[in-house]
Image (cartoon, rainbow, N blue to C red; front, side, top):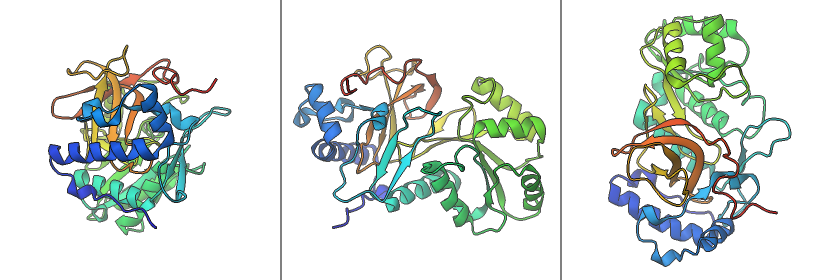
Length: 328
């Protein structure tokens, strides 16, 4: 029997989110063996968990060496993270592509409207050349949803990309350039197009591609070269099925079925109550059949209104807070 899909659009109020989160926690702690083991190691009795701040967050690095899955059927697809040669990558088994598509389409719609208002140009080197990228899957479906012949992937063909931008400027469509950060920097330094009036959205990714810059320096460079007032950003990862978006200055906003919390950097089981820098925990209710409660390797600040910033990553991110289930 096919797993029933949760209705993400039904999550509107904080009360809706709290109720759905607690129900999801109870389901996953019973049906995801790795999560159940993790909760047991912490000596937490699920019946005592009454608020989302009491829910234990699974270290995201466990997707590298444990199966995080509670579906009743075989997954429809497995998304994998990128990594250097020889590095162990994360595997996210997805029970329902329909669930993932509902999440990214509704999420994009909340912040940017219908995809058919855009010409979407995707510049995703490093992702297109490998299989299993959830980012490529999302971009491909959004490109198709634009229903416009100029929308598409532009890998290394810079000349074709520049020609397409000029053609797109003569249409009544908005231009959205979606790109990994290092490809944007290369384009800005070598062949910067005039993108006045367009949306330039970076998805992160400078590691191993030259000098890493702080966000303010990076965005100032890109704004000047592309002639845009702000650089937009997308925050997502292989282990999630939802995305947060920033329309400028690195301040991210979540869709109603996603929430970011901050944990103490020295005590991964304690959540912060202020907006000082802490480890980023994420609740993603679209992760119905894996785990919705993840402790990431990112550092950031979470504000009272739910918005958040990403400040960096833990230096020892592969081990901090994860020793309970790392095999000997």
